[in-house]
Amino acid sequence: MKLLAPEKLEAALREIGERRYHRLHPFHGMLHSGKCSKGQVQAWALNRYYYQAMIPIKDASLIARCEDSAVRREWRSRLVDHDGAYDGDGGIARWLKLTDSLGLDRDYVTSLRGLLPGTRFAVEAYVHFVRDKTLLEAIASSLTEMFSPVIIGERMAGMLANYNFVSRETLSYFDKRPPQAQRDADFALGYVKQHAKTAEQQKLVLAALEFKCGVLWSMLDALSYAYVAPGHIPPGAFQPDSR
Image 1: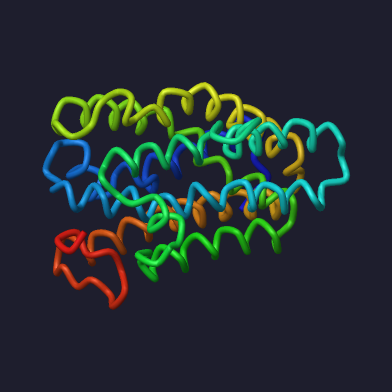
Image 2: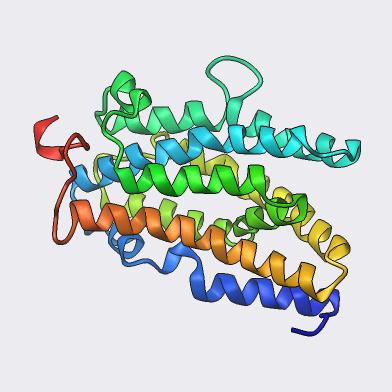
């Protein structure tokens, strides 16, 4: 791989999203078009909770080894976005309002007892990646945020149109995310374009985004296998018909 100009690197990153981002997964097609049962929507929300809950832990590990105070100041806004500035505020709290509104017991959701093993492995792989890889790779792995406003728009429109058990209040988590995601993506993209100065570093940046896309895709693979086809729910995982 030859060293790319910054704009060419950005184009290569966006091309990864066009091919690999999880909005292309068949499960999202079902979710957004109204083809999921309520139980399948519950399973999606319950499993996605673990991802949401681990984002600030992932981000805190990144901040902890970042020597640039300007980057730390920028990155810590992500902690506030998800943890909130006070109890009951932030993205995790809003996600729990979603699971509440879907009829899931909050203690059950937060206990993680019903989590799919595939979800746990994928999310923890992401946390370990950010903790163990270079700071450049860790920041690059967040660049799936470049593509999230599109999927959020599709999700809001599709779910509100197709499910009588959700409302705009139910989906309030997604109202705040597009501007946050755009801000975060702009910063991370600028960072990698500036700091990936060699062909090898650019290769690592591209691989980091591919890895993160794989994390999100594998979470949906696990959901689809357990709750769509062939419908093999692992022992101990959430059983839609029993709750």
